[in-house]
Image (tube, helix red, strand yellow):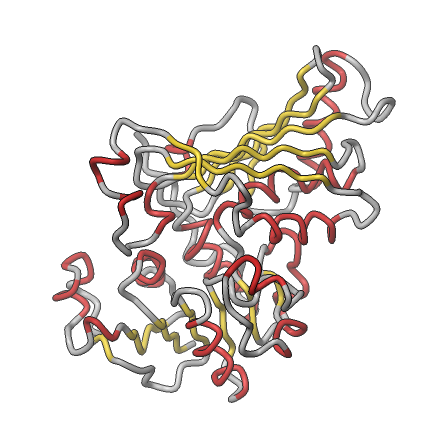
Length: 344
């Protein structure tokens, strides 16, 4: 299939090129980036010296599928005409993730230009919406934080073993902020430093709430979501906590074993989620499309604790997008995505 990328010069766009270069069924035919238009990909970034494409202002080559790696609002404006022309689109921005158009002015400071497409778009967390993704024209790729948080909590939410009073504490590497310069991502500000941000409400909160509600509409959610920036390039580590409903699990070691069984059964046939025997680490997902999940119980407080790790640029962005593309074109879900993490 012929593939196009809008905005190849951002981190997600560059990661798409890296992963698609080894995809046996995808031919990259067009990459755009207005600030670098006219340059060969290898001139823009020597990593891509062997990719024979020139960056252009607009898409060329009649692609069958287009990945949009533009910022929010700009992405919706670029994607809508493509969808209307019959091109299949995977949007890596937030522009088609939320089903309620009224949420966009609140969380993203713009009125959605194509609210009619929100009804059609499919939230592209494959592990939750596999069947819908396979038939979609427009896929809204999940946010990086929601990917780790939802995958950490979905089995417990589905099984109804926890109350909705959930805390998600997430920590991200700096690449999650993108390439745009800001004081908060300046080396001198980030190095040897950790800090919380968006403490009055991160814009990924409604996305997590929406999807967990879909997993179990009966669960009344009261979700606290807090994000931190940590001094590393890639990776998201999420620690999730929720009270276990009395009587839903046996006590002691038997309860811990049961939780592991619930999670392993839920993710049994899903190639990119692994339920681990020990708490995972971000470096164990570096450069690959895995989400590592470790569920356990704090016996003292009878509280579920789940830890998840992803690479925010792969499972949290470009890798998840290719996973969705594979399903949309009836290819093996793991095609082009079998890399083992770089460790140490």
